[in-house]
Image (cartoon, rainbow, N blue to C red; front, top):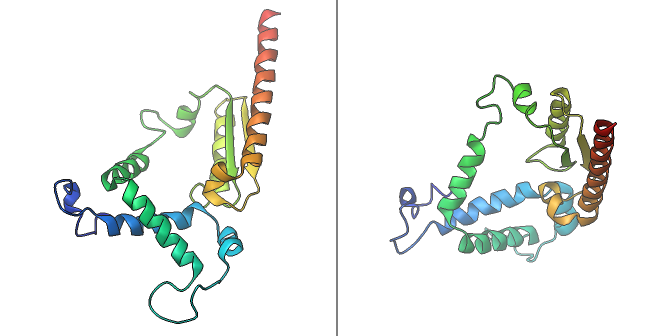
Amino acid sequence: MIMTDPNWHNGHYYDKDAYPLDGMRIAREIATLTYRSGPEWLERFGLRRFSDQIHLAPTFEIESYLQYQGLTFAKKYDPNSLLYISKAMDLFNLTEGYESQNDALSQIQCPVLVLGSQTDILFPIWQQKQLAEGLINAGNAHVTFFELNSIFGHDTFLLDINGVSTALKGFLEISALSIEEENEEIQS
C-alpha cells in the first residue's frame, strides 16, 4: 500500500511537500486487523454502528477505530522504515549457512521458551509447536512450550499480562532449576 501511494516517489519523498500518508494509513489499518483476533473484534465492537445512515463512509465503530489507528501510526512512523523492517523480516532465513533446519536449530542449546497464542494468525500456534518440537529434535533438552488461551491474537504478548507473566515465571523457575541440577551433576 505504501509503494502504491503516489506520494511515495520510490522512497524519495523526504524533500517533497507530501509523503505517502494514505498508503501508510491503509497499510496500518490492514495490519491492525491481523494483530488481533476475530473473537476480540466481535467482543469489542460487535456490529455496532455509530450512524444509522447508510452511505459510503464509515458506519461501524470498528471502521472508525481502524481509521484512527491507521492515521495516528502514519503520522508518527516513517514509511521507508516500515518497508525496510518488513523486508528484513521477509528475508530472514534461519537455515541460511546451514545444511538443514535441524542443523541450524542444533546450534541453539540455551533454555528456550516458545510462547504462542491460540488466536495469533501471524504466527499460528501450530508453527510455535513446530518450532518447539524442532528445537527438541535438534537436541535442545531445555525447551518449554506454553500456549496462551487469549482472544488478543498476535498482541497477546502486549495485552495478556497475567498469562505472559505466568509463562515467563514458570520458564525462568524451570530453567534455573535445570541449570542448578546440571551444575550439581558436573560437580559430582
